[in-house]
Each structure stands twice: as C-alpha cells, then as structure tokens.
Image (cartoon, rainbow over all chains, first blue to last red; front, side):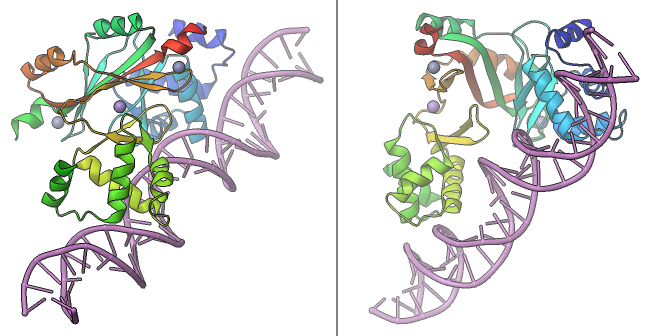
Length: 141
Length: 141
DNA sequence: TCTGTAGATGATAATAATTATCATTATTGT
DNA sequence: ACAATAATGATAATTATTATCATCTACAGA
Ligand SMILES: [Mn+2]
Ligand SMILES: [Mn+2]
Ligand SMILES: [Zn+2]
Ligand SMILES: [Zn+2]
C-alpha cells in the first residue's frame, strides 16, 4: 500500500478519493478479475457519484504503472486484477463451460525466452492462457 | 484446399463465391494476421460488392471449424490467420516498438498441461504471447 | 430444366466497450 | 487566499462487432 502510494506520487498522480476507492476495490478483490463496470458498482458503494470515465481512467493509469494487470478472457471486455509484487505474473486457466478463471503459478517459459534472446529479441513480458474444463465441469462430462 | 472443402460440406456450408474469396485471401496471406477490415479490402478485389457482414460471418464460421485461428494482439480488434494442419498452433512475439508479429514454434507447455491434468482439469487449448522488442528494434535502442 | 426451400448476402440499424470533450471542481505550492 | 495544474462527471463520439430483414442464390428433387 505504501509502495503503491510512493509509486503514484513519483508519477505526479494525486491520490484522490476516487482513486483510493478504486484501489481499495481492487485490493479487496485480490485474485478476482474485474471488469470496469464491476469496479464501478463496487466503487459506488464508497463514492456514490463516481463516474465510469473516472473508473476507466484510474484503471488505465494503475495498469500503466504495473499496479494492476489488464487482460481479456472470453468476453470482449478487459478485466483488471491487482498485480503481484514479483515481476513475472501468473497464468490463467479459463473454463470453457462455467467461465471460471483459475491461476497457475510456475514459469516454464524461461527456456523459450532465452532462445528468443539468442535470436536478438528482447522479451520483457509474456501472457499465457489455457482453455479447457475446470475439475468440477470436467467431472460432469 | 480439398480438406477444407470437405470440412465445409460436412457442415452444410455452401462454398459460395464470397467464401471462396475470403478463403483465397487468407491463403495468399499465410503467416499474416489480418483484421476483418483488411480481409474486406482484399476480398473486394475479387468481389467488389462483398459486404463487411459477410466477411465477419465467414471469418467466424471458418474459425469455428478451426480453418482459421483468431486472436487479438495490441489493438482492440481481432485478427485471423490460416490455421496450421497440426493441432497445436504456434505462439506469437509482439514487438512493442514496431508492432511486428513473429511466430514461435515449439511447445514447451506439455509439462504444465499435464500438471493441470493431474489436478482434474482437461486442457484443450492454450495461447501464448510474448511482448518485447524484435531484433531490429532491439538494435536501435 | 423447373421449382421450392434452406441457406447466404448486403445494407443498415443496433449494441457495447472504450475514448474524447469540456465545463466544473478539487488539490497543491506559494 | 490565490494562481496553476490536475482530476472529475456528464455526455457525446468512436469503433468493432452483431442483429435484423428483405432479397437473392444454390441445389436437391420432381
Ligand atoms: Mn489472475
Ligand atoms: Mn500466427
Ligand atoms: Zn468450469
Ligand atoms: Zn520491432
């Protein structure tokens, strides 16, 4: 939380009530992947007249500072979650039946990344998603 | 081409002039990742009055039959490319500077997938993207 | 070859997520 | 308190995609 604070101040971002509200929503939903609209509903519990534009602006700002991580799963809308402290984030398993998103840790990609390094690339991030059926849905089929 | 034909007929899809045009565009651009609108421009060289709705419909149909592969990179629009014959598709490296998309073969993910299998998941697909700088852009920095 | 019909098409309207605009308001350093 | 700057909310605009619907086409069967 303090780390986030200093990060914001270093970038001339004022920590307004609205931004605090959005941040709190994200922190209370660690591990979940919220859409802008879902964040809006939650944030309105704290700041009833907060606008959707502010929510979008705040989410984008926080994502650009790596405080949030932005990704898209099956629907065509972006979702946001609190970033982890360590640099490389986890991966996702999307259930094609119930839509549940689970997380996978572990980073088997260094091998591939170093191969790319040798080819002249400089890789700074990656994104890995698995699609399939979660244990519950898998049992029912 | 014949494999595609039979696949279409098996699914009651008539191989109309418009669909042939879209297919030809995709086959002439093997390895490229085209948006619906880009496909429209190319298809209009063959069928000048083909409509955007037909292009979208055709791309979706072909993707649902695994003839095309659909994905999204940096912009917020979907892109399509001809699928490869073998089941597991390649991965992508997106250059954050020039936008170039290169392909990575190799499939280091079986290990992770079998770990998920043991946990009760049934994984049927995955998607892996690397973000960074291509050899050319990397040199200039 | 003719014909009925399911399927396909193109024009266009509708939807939905995101972004831009702009007048008003809040925060901060002096 | 004041000026400068940044942030906000309402709302319009944009953009990609999907739905609607009247018209057209391919093709199996007579
Ligand atoms: Mn996650
Ligand atoms: Mn590709
Ligand atoms: Zn499930
Ligand atoms: Zn590049």
